[in-house]
Every structure is written in structure tokens, then in C-alpha cells.
Image (cartoon, rainbow, N blue to C red; front, side, top):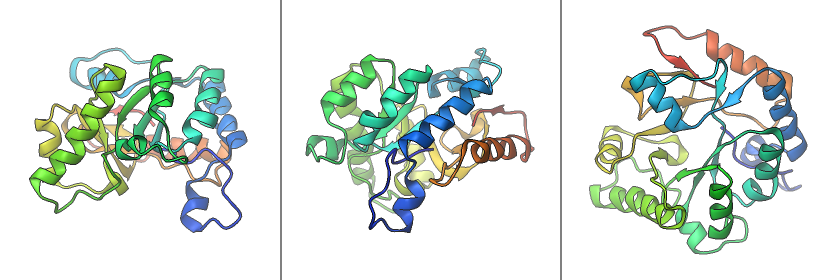
Length: 233
């Protein structure tokens, strides 16, 4: 789980520092993943593996980038292509509509989609949906889904909970809107068909070296038990 792929500004607060991975470090991470034998997959492939036994690579990884910052296109996208990886970009469609300079434009979204990147929904705006009315949740999740589909002409099947917040009502509405699943900010790499709307992820912090990333992945893959699951960092 990445956010900013950029060097934070000199006045950045602790949150921005934690969420910012400089491009050179992001490249270091991808180089490590490639040399370690990881192969990027999509959330659709994960779903098929969990539901039907669809074969996955020996070391699958799903790379996600939240919020749709402009550096997803200017920094992350070219490095991903250089190293032969795909990624899932969870975007806020209201900010794309407003053409804010710090966020992705629709033209950039369309280009990344055409190049094989996966574009999924993070909401219309970045609002915690817990405790909100049904109509408001539908506006946030269905509006974002339709806005992306209108540009990419591909089904949007996955949602990223804003700020990681979710409850049973949000998950039920996502399911009724024909989403296949949703990702959380809960730490872990154990993915199960019974928890498609509670998919775990590993937060990548701005201070992580490639070696740190490797250790965190290994910990997530070996520290959890329970029912048989597919392990995908």
C-alpha cells in the first residue's frame, strides 16, 4: 500500500513524511521485488484464485497506490513500466473532475488504463463512510464507479475504504453495487474468499529500504495462521 511517490516538501508533517516514498526508493523496492521473483497480479486474478482455484505465480504481489496523487502518473507509472510491474490505482473521482493540480487528470487515468494498469475506486471524495446514510454511501461508491467506467470502458470491481474506515453497512452496499471486494488498511497478507471486503495490505512507509520491505513482507506472510488462504503481499 503506497500513497505519495515523491520527495515530501520541507514543511511536510509527520503523516506526509510517513506516506511519502521518494521515486528512487520506489525503484529500489521494485528492483528488490523483481530480483526476489515476485510477479505482480491484479485483484481480479486474486479473486479468481480464491473463488475458482485460478493459478497464480509462485510469488504473487499486488501493488496498490491510494488517493490518485499526480505523482502516481509522473513518478510511479514510468518506474512500474520499467520494471515490468502492473499496479492498482485507487482514485478519488471528484478530485479528477475538479482537475486539481496535485491529483491525476482523467487523461492520465485513461493513459495508465490503456497501458495495463488497474484503475479502481476510492470514492467521490475522501470521506470515512462509517455511520453515513445509505443514500450518501451509494452516491460515493456508485458515483465513483460510474465515473471511472465511463472513461476506461471497463468494469470497476474493487473499492478502497477512505482512511481505512468501514463497517458492515458499507460492505453490504458495495456488494449490492456489484463490487467484488474492497481493500482495507489492516496489516496482513492472508486473503480469504470469506473476507473479500476485508482484504489486508502492507503499508509501505517512507523510511523503508528494500531490505526493510523484504522483512515486513516476510513477517506478514509467516505470522498469520487460520484457515487456508492465498498469501499475497
